[in-house]
Length: 102
Image (cartoon, rainbow, N blue to C red; front, top):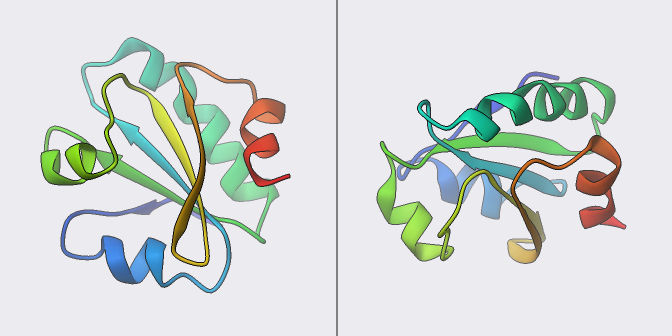
């Protein structure tokens, strides 16, 4: 399954109203650790169809970053039933990211 790009307009429908748990990667194009995290996020999207995997560019959507108190990137946020259930900051191996949903 592909990574879904979300923004201010579609965040509610794509993440908060998702029919399965959602992983949101808050990132920016200029962020080195974010680029290192990208293949991990893409692998999770491909290997775990039970999750909805999304990316939010914080430069294009600063309101979302502020709403979820994103102070450092990459920040990975886990959502279930419209609620934030966990976060991880900085580069994370795939196993650590998946533990957000355990």
